[in-house]
Image (cartoon, rainbow, N blue to C red; front, side, top):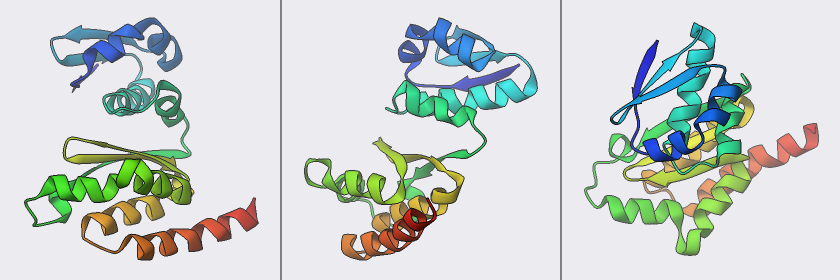
Length: 162
């Protein structure tokens, strides 16, 4: 049995029957905590999916985490900068009308969302390190163009393989 804290309990409880079926666990709610019951492996994967759903990921994107080929990570912006104007940093990640975030997602083949002072990433294992490095570089103040160039190099080489 695992217990996790999530902020968006309603979102999860609204999809409870579907989640329990796909995750192969029993989920119950105690305030802002979710209790996951099942075998250890299923609990592990369920925890990853439920934590991803606590961010504004779509259900289908979060369910990708049931596959071992996908990784999930939460980057706390404060951990990578000494700056105190976190709204400016979040704005740099998102960009005007979400353009920077869209480019980051496309070039890194990843799902990236920003919530509060955190950036969450769901990505294939092969693409994960590039996506993580791209986000951290933007947080630390690198120019968008330099980050995009870095991501494009990895993106083009991956295209050739496919």
